Image (cartoon, rainbow, N blue to C red):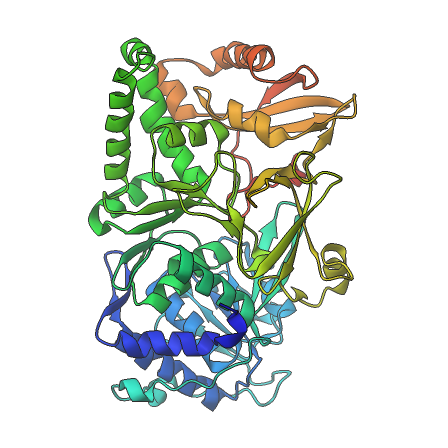
Length: 550
């Protein structure tokens, strides 16, 4: 199906009308809204935009934690024909203010607790700041650059109870801009990714066709909604099917997420590797440190029974009702992936980036290949910039409807990643097999050229180190032409095991020795390691900001 034959706004409109009486968006342990409620609230926001003088194409900033009301404001903005600028609440106030100004936003929806940290004088283009969830006026500017922006009273614009026939949105062109997504990347200063309606539409239609989800199914949304991965696949795609979506409004620690799974029993789960790897390290690896189990898994037939028991336990941990676990947003630990594959766990690893809104490749858990990231989606072409794309890693290049229009007001940065033929240069290195499966080898910017001219991918070394006992995470960097492993200890594991921090250097030295003797080729030599005292700073999708540690 070609996305040009569909329309994003009509897709949202149809979802509301067709599922009018059914449950739609909820806050975990809080507010619940039907599709009728969503439609009514969207009409309210539309009436406010009209009274305030907002035009099609105007930029509307959205700043808040995951919530049903966040989702309503997102939908209201896009269906009005305005451009949504979702901002991660974790950003520092100075960065938030810079994004709002750079994006030319005329209205800001913000949670009051976050708004109090901001200085409106640093956002001179902004006319109005409205509170989430009640649209109460937190700030208004009498003299704004755009004099047409007015400050109506939200309460006077509340509509009477809506009917399905009243949900009639003005359709937008697939070429129109839907979102400007500012996400701090691993390569430095955040840029505004401009996504057109056709990019969101392509992602949603592909998911409808290929991902195992049905109307009325339940979803637990715990990824950041201001990031395209969580927004597209935990919110927009399920919404268009008429699903029941619960937003985890609390900090998404593994403990809280596991608790919510037990209560909601979602049918489809999307996650970043960090959460899954944490479960693997805390609930699976300790079992294999027990001598008896370590011996039993080496016995034929008996080991099949053990893996089946562990598989069942893991399925129950995730709520016991899901059809598939989709992992994306960052590389998945190779050792954990092998184990999950060995026990036939229903998981798959996808590949995407914000610049593609975000999906690039995916395949179901039944057909996924070990180490692979699925096949390229319908609306994209892919090629590997390599003399031999099947054996020699090269940069992954993409072209198609999912690809961004460019970086907002940054022609230089846009030209650096989209060439004259329209190919997006992802910065990721990979190969492709003869069936079209993509295998990611690493980031081109993190790749290290070894002394013998061979490519070294630090992510592969880190994946091994990260599974070692008392290692929380690691980062391999090049210093003076030598590989150095920065290691952040797992303090809880250290304390539970009865070790002291003074003993860690000898333990980690043993890990490095084992790495060199049994896991790494001879041309890769980790010369030394350092213990760091603070968690590595990360992007919203939980990738380490490598540039800070070079």
